[in-house]
Image (cartoon, rainbow, N blue to C red; front, side):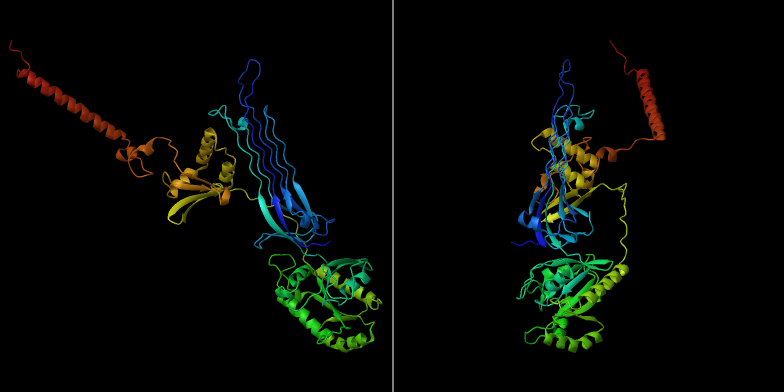
Length: 504
């Protein structure tokens, strides 16, 4: 059974928020004392946190499905539901969180580094929190919001100061066992080491970690064998040590050709963009060459033969034997000097800054976009508030649906729909994916002007007449008085002419 796992797929689900409560307070002499339904509790979130006691992702290999506790439902007498506790998952230092498509979501480096994988849902409001002067006794409450669901890929990139790299059976595991207290599995066949081994080396007052990276082969940078699985653990190491086998019996192999092959694979491996330690090309890091197995007479002769060529390349060379421990002490102190040099040249980590980003005054918090799907058009609304309100609405309750319509109207959704060209009966989608809500939009009638004939957005009562000014009112009054005077004069003339005289 594997005891070291460096890549898993985690299926995380946040806790659901509790539903709000619908309750009316009843007591002596007050049979209907008003709403007293409490709010539902928030669901717990799933959080990844770097734990120094965790060194592998084995736990999530066996149980990849994680679900945070849900919040409790609200109760009468203003009692609020309990809040679900966050589920904190410990991960090793150097864990990279990626999406299934390969996008880097977080790089967890340093004890205590956190990342929220799946946030818990908000609890629904009870009818006591919804009550207002216009809605004194709501007969509904808001539902709890479902927790987020997300699948992420966890990749462990070993954080060590020194990486031992080389062909299979070059003696890397034996070297780690000789330099530190680590006891990796050692055998006389290739690919004995299938997972990286870590060892702590003490050289005087300096202490550093050494990683035994499993053997590389030609084409490892292209994914041959388990090359990419192994190269991933080299990205964060500051010093690279080439362990060359001087006692190999394979035809066509010698220390120089082995070095050229491994150097080519390192140069071809680009690493992940945006990961700390991955931006620096591997070929620009501090390097050293170790000629191993000089306890064999032929290997010692070969080491003496190739050492001048390696020195001509500007590489520091050490001849050692992991079996007899010959040359180990100078090697450990030389590695300590390189590690201290890398630590001095490394940029100092900047303290975490608290960045405050206040919301803009004119920011509505949602967008309305006109989209086309085949022969018909629809309008999509995206935003935290509208999508949450829709998820928390009980569409079996007409009063709750009306409350949602009022909230959307106050938020300014209808104005933006009008501006986007929506008309009555247009298809509107709030949200995205399978949880989106689709409905035919009917504008809220506020003044009745929408019933007048005319283009949408116009008011015939305003267009046909305007409010008269004081001068216009004075002219109208004089014209009305003059018309009355003329009518009286005409009646008087008819009277004098005997038009109104009764002959009988």
